[in-house]
Structures are given as C-alpha cells and as structure tokens.
Length: 68
Image 1 (tube, rainbow, N blue to C red):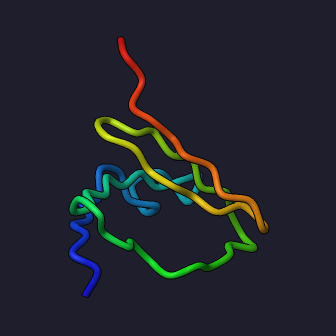
Image 2: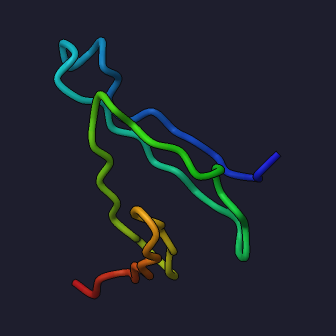
Image 3: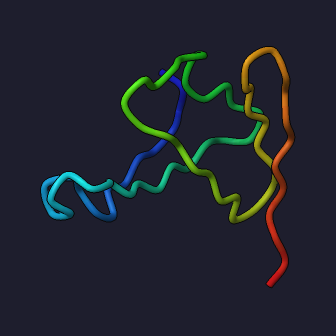
C-alpha cells in the first residue's frame, strides 16, 4: 500500500529479544507508514540516500543522508 520494502537484517529472536534491525526502502515522494507510537521500544533511523521526514510529537524533522 505504501510501496515500502522491508528487509529483516537481525530478528528479535536472533538477538534474544534485545533488538531487531530492519532496512526499509521507501519510494520517492512516498508516504511511508501512518503516524504511530511505540511504547515498548525506540526507533533509530539512518538515512542512506535522499532525505526522510519524521514526526516526533508535533514537530517534523528532515533527516538527510550523511556523507562518509
């Protein structure tokens, strides 16, 4: 529906429930998942290319790919 592709890099089962790691590819100008909240864990983002707008509370933040 959103056109995103999700690849599981490390599952929670493989990491004994400590964390899971996924890679998400979004199409250009895509909406991504709808606004939601996680009560049990935190999300961390690393932008590989392009930019990503995330909403935290009522604020929007534009994340950009870092240059190595």
